[in-house]
Each structure stands twice: as structure tokens, then as C-alpha cells.
Image (cartoon, rainbow, N blue to C red; front, side, top):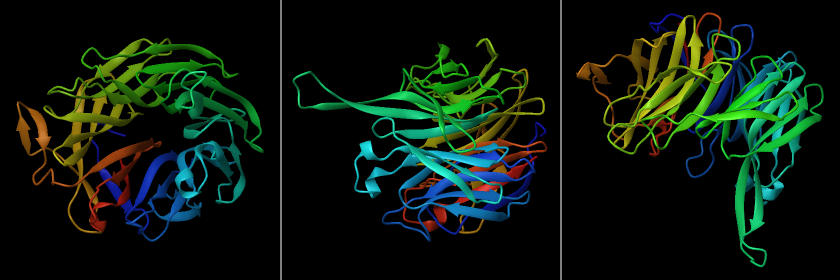
Length: 396
């Protein structure tokens, strides 16, 4: 993929206005697996529950597997046998307590047939937020909860969570190991095709050995931020490198997004703080391209937001900055726009944007050999079905 981003196609996924995609993974032959759910409630769309969808190289849906209301798929990875999905169970729609709704993993063939699906009871209100393939199975990561008494003689219960990783065998889902760690926000996990893992949570990166033992962890607090988070992690250009997206906030005039690249030893290779000045910016996802990095982000403005993509060279030089916006209309495709308005040479917004009440984000980036899949989710809170769509785009 070049530094200058070019649109090849966009495809709206599903007819529902409440569909949200949470993760994606390449199929291995140029296509894409995505997972997510269709929200239920007063603005129910054409369906409900969770889904795993396979799309081909031009965005056509080749098959889709659906779950009931209780399943919330959160992440997907690819193994030699097919895709594997991890997620959580929604207690609110089961009438059961959090203690009775375990996190779960499901394995599928490449044709969409479910091979196995198991719940993994471990604590209270458990959730898997990320999953990766390893040479002999998969590892899912998230959080595990526990209720404890406030004091030994108290009737009050306090709920707390810890980071949690679970390794299972790919053939039948048998548990290989399960470990919990300090922290409560394991959101993204990377394996680089090996048994050694690392994940992000809060403002730290944690390195995990092949047996689940925590080897080390390191905090990466930005000098400019007091409310830092590292929200996604992906492989870098070299073995053991990590590309991380997040934010560095001070709750002042400048709340930037963050692109962080570290090497196998945890040393910072590159750090950049992009975003629109005067507003709060989120780094959503980050990946490598052929000789640099690509970061997706969202700027939160007054009752609206502006999603964007920005490219950097391997040395951190900015190469391209595009807004991802969609004109009004139920079938209008998103489009990449440059900023027509600038302040001091910094892009501010494209002509006609932002639009009050419109909220969207490029939540997921999935690299392929020749380009990049992007997931554009509209998160608008209004009653308008035209402002709650999900689109898949392919860029080169």
C-alpha cells in the first residue's frame, strides 16, 4: 500500500441500521472476515444478535453465521482450519446474572460451518475482547471479574476485574492454560505467529511467555498526557516490533491521538501525536504499510465527530491525511476527503463537514498483501436510520 491512499470500493454491510463491526481478519485469499452484532432495543433493525461474515475481494458477502441475542462476538482471527471468534455473553438479555454468562470461543471451517463453540466460566461478567492464532491453537484475551466483600463483616460486595488470557487447542477447544494479571483493560493482543504474546491495557504493554507467564510489562505514559490509553496493538516491520494506537490527553486545549512504535525490547522507535488542534482525538487502530505506518483516528467535536486516516513514513514523516466522511443519504458511500479548511497549515475539516449530530469512526484496519480493508461504523445516537450504517472499504 502506498503512502497516498486511494479508494478502490466501498460496500455497506447488511440492511440493518444498528449493525456494528468490532474486528476483522484477512481470509488468506484476499477476502475478509468481520464480526460484530446488531443492537437490539427500541431502534431494532432487520435482525438481531451477533454475526461472523465472510466477504470476497470485491466486498461481496459469501456467507454469514448468526448468533442469538445473548452472543456478542468481539474478535476474530484466522487459523489453518478456518476463522475463530471470541466474545462475551450479554446477561441483560438472558435474565441471568453476570456470574452465569461466561466468555466464549467458537471455531469455524472456511465454508462457515461451526466446528465447535464453548463457554469458559472463570469469574463474574467475563469478556473476551481480542483473539490471536498461535502455532498450536488460539489465545483469547479480555477481563475476568470477581465480587468480594467490602470488609470481612460487610454485606456489601465490590466488583473488580483483572486482565485474563486463555489458550485453547484448535482441534476441539480444550483449555491449555488460563492466567489472570494485574489490570482491567486488556483490549488488544498480538502473537506474530509464535507462542509468545504481548497485549495492551491502560497505558502499558505486557509481554507473555508461551505458558502464560508474565515476563515483563512497561508503561508508556506520554509526556503530554495524563489520561493516556493504548487501545490496539499490531505487528511491526521487524520481528517483535509493535505498532500501537491510542490517545494522550491532558483535558486541556490539545488532546491528541497517539501512534507508538516499539521494538522487541520495548524501546520506543517512533512516537507521533496527530489529530485536530483544539479538540479531543482518539487513535482507533494502527497497522504497517509497505514502508511506513497508517493510523485511523476520530476527532470529537461539539455533538459530532470526524474520522480520519493518516500515513507516516518509517521515520515518522507525515505523508497523507484524509478525512473519512459520508454525505447524507441511506446508500451514499463514504469517501476520503482532504481538508479544505486549514489553520496554520494543519488540516481542520473538509468542505461541508463536520455535520452536527453525525458520529462515525474508522474502528478497524486490516492489512492485506496489496492494500487495506477499513471498517467505517456510524455511531450516531439519533433516530435517523440514515446515520447508523456500517461500511467496509478497500484502499490501496
